[in-house]
Length: 231
Ligand code: CA
Image 1 (cartoon, rainbow, N blue to C red):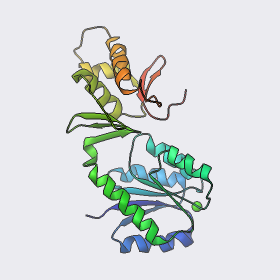
Image 2 (image 1 turned 180 degrees about the vertical axis):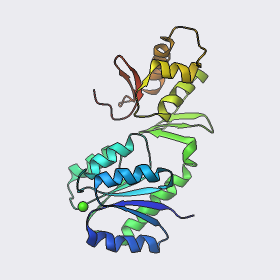
Image 3 (image 1 turned 90 degrees about the vertical axis):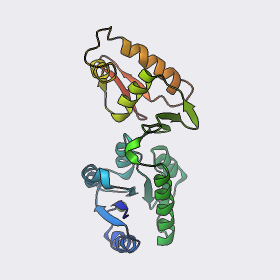
């Protein structure tokens, strides 16, 4: 099986060296030369991509912003690449969801080793379509198991369905009506505020004992599940 890597880097000297090396290791490489192109190619190839190598300094959108947008609803492995070696940058990259970090100049063997580690890790997590992840929250539709960090979270059937709807649309605001239709069915004849009640149950289990809140109220509209909520 061939793994596909999205390489995001604007320096020709580096890409003309990296691409043949990656291809020699049997990776298929898609090249983006700026941040906007990276997001476009990511959207168009989403189902096929296995890993992203993302430079920090890029035209149009920088690597950190590209990473933040991708991380809204995808846990694809990302290696950040940078010429800078400030601890602050490394922290910002990892905080924004980079899985690993490599400082230029680097040995190709080091990059290849990091790629192998992340791809192996990803395969161990199983089929992508079975697993939804937002930050440290995961929902596995095969085992129906929900975890946050190392904690297994026990949910009732209704809570599970509600969380599944939210996590499938992570980063999108869903209205109460949309949640009602999806979780309780279009024929539901009870009070719409049942959604608010179940959101409260869910928050108690999924968010309350954790530092980052993932379920957010969008006033007047509904709810959104995301790790990067801006008021
Ligand atoms: Ca660059």
